[in-house]
Length: 163
Image 1: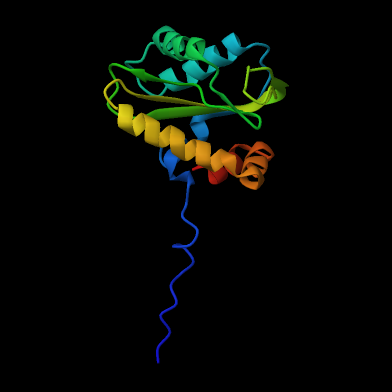
Image 2: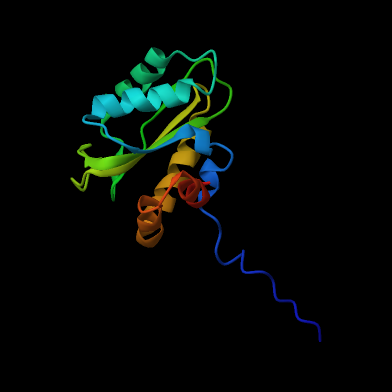
């Protein structure tokens, strides 16, 4: 009787497809010294706006800042997911900054963050927006994987773990 063993993919679904194709090495900054939440959002806005010529950095920053005013996007465990919906884009874009020193970010666990992954989605993509955020939350809920991501030695390692 032939074996019907399947590869191990069914029992271990990949939770990290959320950023697949969205986050590339040129959209990540590593070991950046940033002194405030405001500066971090400005840096992320700069990285996001570089991805589309039509994007204005100030508009992107305002979008991230307005969302942050509703409540911290720090999710705990040293991670923040600043995000927002924006008119004028037709697909999701992402950027990440790995901080040189942890930064207070009003996360629910009161721990400073070491990694911020920013996400912009089209204004009318509410469902997709929530799906990506849910996938990221699941990815970072796994303490072992989160620890590996936070300790990734370089941009390439971070991309491999995230995307």
